[in-house]
Length: 541
Image (tube, rainbow, N blue to C red; front, side, top):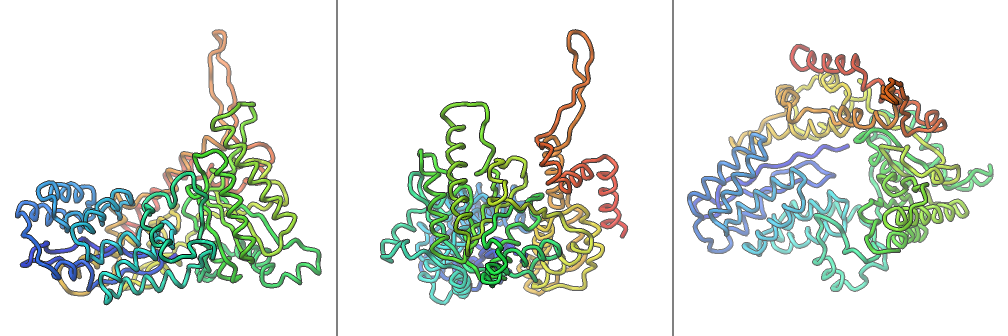
C-alpha cells in the first residue's frame, strides 16, 4: 500500500511582505510533492489587506506546533488567529489542513468554504476539498474540485496530476448526469466531507478499474493463490470453468483484524482480472427513509450486472448483513435490519441463479455478527482469514511503503521487530509520520534531507504516534469469542457460571485461526513479550 506524506501549513502570512507558501495534502494514490502554485498565486493576484499582527503571531505559533506534530495545540493557535482576525484566509486554510490530517473532514470543509469566500481565486482550497473527497473514495466529487482548482489556476501542476489520476480510475454509469451542466450543479450541492447524497435519494455508486495487482500485496501467499484460482481465473477464462461444471460467481468473506489489507486485496483482484469494481460502503447504502436501503442495495447489484465482469465489495459487511433479531420484536430498527438483510438475500440469490461475471466480496472484522443465512454456500459461502503480517512481511512492507520516499539506508529488520503485532495500516501510518521530519526540514531550511533510521525511531519512541491499533482491537473483541467463568452468588451460595462468547460450534471451527490469534494476543505472557521485543528493538537493537 502506498504511503502518503502530509505537508505542513504555509509559511508566511497573507500580507504582501510575507506571502504564504502553498501546501496541499496528498491523494491516496501518490506521494506528496511540494506545490509551487495555488494559494500563493491567488494571494498575490489581488490587493490583500494587512493581517492583524497578533493574529499573525498566533498563526506562526500554530505553524511551529504543526511542524512538531502537535496538531491539537496547533489547532488552538489557529483558532486564536481567526478569532483575532476573522478575515485571515491563511489562518482558516492552515486550520483546515490540520483538521484534514486529523481526519476531521467536516470541520476542514467548513474552513475551506470560508477560504474560497475570502479568496475566490484560491486553487489550494478546492484542491484540498478534492483530496478529502478522494480519500472517501468519492471519485466524482474529487474530480469536480480538482477541475475547480485548475480553473482558478490553469498552471497548477498538482491539480493536473490529480485530475489525470482520477480520470485513469473513474468509470461513471452513463445514466448518471447525462447533462454536464446539470451534473455540475448537482455536485456543488454535495458535502464531500460526509455523505455523498442527501437522505431519501437512491444512491449512485461509481465503479472503476483498479491498477493494483498481487505484486502490490505483501505476503498472504496462500490467500493470493486461492483468489487467483477461484476468482481471477473464473473472470479471465469463464469457458474453462463451464466445461468443468464449476460455478462462475462466488461470494467470499475476507475477515480479520482491521488494517490488514482486505480492501487493498480486493483492488488487487480487480487489477489482476481486469474487472470493474464497486466499493459499496455502509454510508452509501443505509437510509433513514423506509424502503430506500433495500432500493440502494438493488441499485448496486443492477449496476454491477450492467457492467460485467464486476466485483461488488461490501466493506463492513457485518453492519449491513447483521444477524436478524430472533426475539420477534416488531417495527423500529430491528424491522429495518430484517428488511435490509432480506433484500441482501434476494440479491445474492439472483447472483447464485445467474453468476457469470459477477463476484460479491465482503470484508469484516467481526464475522460472527453476520447473519447465518448470508454465510451459507452459494451466498458468502467461503470465509478467508486475512491475518496480521509476520516478521518477514513487515520487513517487506517497510521497504514497500518507503520505496518512493527519499531515504537513506534503513534497517528493515529492526523496524520489523519494533513493530511486532502491528498491522500494515499501522506500518504505513508510522512511515507517513516519519517522512514528515525530513519534509519539514526542507520546508524550513530549504535543503533536502533523506528519511533515516533516526526519523523512524523518533516516531516509534513517541507514545502518541507509535501505538498498534491491533492491541486495542484484540482486547475489545476477546469478550465476543472467548468463554469465561464468572462466580456469582445465587441463593446465598457461590456458583461458577460459564459465559460463552458469540460463536456457535460451527463458527468456532470456521474461525478457529482467528480465535487462536485473539487468545494469543490477549494472553498476559504474549502481551509482555510483545512489549519487550518492541522496547528492545527501539532502544537497544
